[in-house]
Image (cartoon, rainbow, N blue to C red; front, top):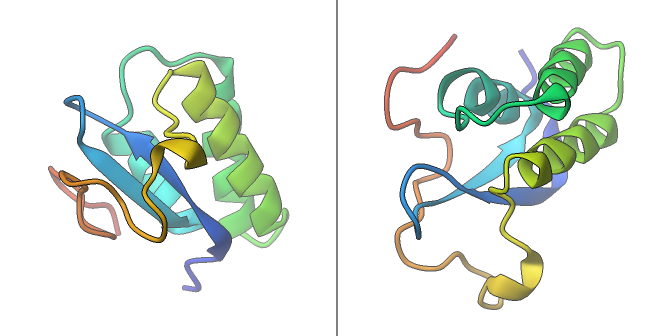
Length: 106
């Protein structure tokens, strides 16, 4: 299945302060929303997960998934704004792309 890559990654801070995760695709976003997202979930989290699943099924655009993920990250206070990132790379402590700290869905 096509992972539906984002035009630009979304960076979130999950788990501990300084633990960054770069989400590069709709599939990665859906996995993250389902498995490692913080407990302070709200309606934007549900919307983002629903949107990601619809994108993976071919019913919505990748841009829709990215926008929904950004809104969910803002709602849960885990979005890392671009101005907090050094030029071209993540700060120390990032989680490797595509790696989930626990379990992975396929």
